[in-house]
Image (cartoon, rainbow, N blue to C red; front, side, top):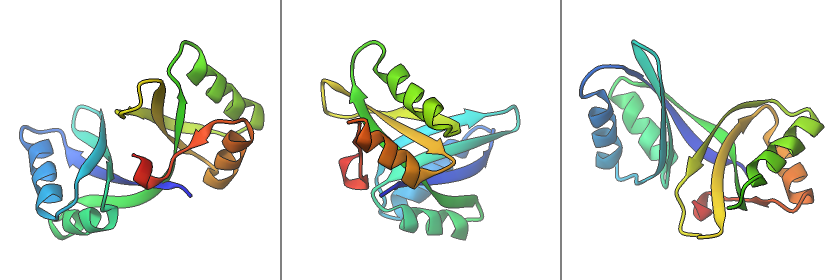
Length: 140
């Protein structure tokens, strides 16, 4: 089962990130991960939260462009080459990787990665078959 991620469009201006974080906090949702990709004028925040539907509703009510999207999260061994091996599996299967970012976790020997791909169900099945741990929302 894919993990829900919030994607939020924000102006690249002083205080914008703080306002978004305040709205999410006031909704009662807790952040698990945040990634920001920006341009000169706008940024896209990608957030994993314990209550994604609550957080996105609060952001929409505040006038932000936001949506919930499903992504794949995996745990790979924390060693040189492990991520490259996982990406090779995607390449060999012809799965397109749109973007990826890491998530801090408490496991010393694992690296958590979030991936946006063109086929979540197939990607999860391929990773499981290859022995790569597919994470659920409660794992993050």
